[in-house]
Image (tube, rainbow, N blue to C red):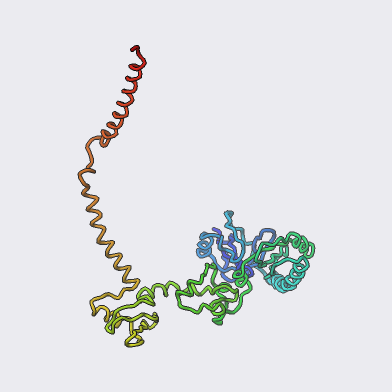
Length: 359
């Protein structure tokens, strides 16, 4: 039985292949040569067996972060063989020559006066294809550039436009936290991040503090967003006025980690009180501390009470809507309408001959 393997190439590009030798299975981290679109490519195994099968079955559209990946319906291509030392040496030479190739591409871009930024270049292992990754705000007509580069490198040229987040994932780097970018190390799918995530967490809206190396909002803003939303449901809304043992007080801020509430009163000034004590003060006055969690609980209770009443109303219909027996229930009313219409038509037919007869 063939073995499904996940092979990663330069950057975040990866694909799935099959390995036919069941007696000598591949292991994670091994270098292999695989069948490419036109020739062979060099990569390393990152997943094997059931893990790779599940990833491949989940959809191949996410196989290449930053690449214009298209879901392939064809069967995965086979792994040619394990890579040798000579294959690894050729791959290292290709990687060292990619910087020089990138500089030449940038020069040709300037010559053609194209508004595009060349981010990275990638040689296929057998040098049958050179992939050039670039970013641009608008669509770029690079047909003349492709012909120029094909004559320069004597190989097939593929230009692929990517976004700034995908560019950061390919080039990698160190974030403001001191660790490698999530998108280049372990985050495989780049989900959208909006400014509302920072507002819900009460973070500074200064772009320099909540933006990553790509210039977009930090991907990590989404990691703890659900916790912040769930935790704030237990607290009163900021800006709301509640009645406590000291009288009316306005909620200035909440501390979800220490479970404290900052209150301010016109008579007694400001104070910090734990959430548990605030709830006890409000309940001691015969009231309920209204929060999003309490409101949802009240709505659920009212809905549960309303369900039995609705079932009783449906089970005991009124007399005017009482069902009739027999298959012709409800038809007499329509028949009466037809009779009235028919009577008018019959009267017209009788009046016609009478008026047209001899007087």
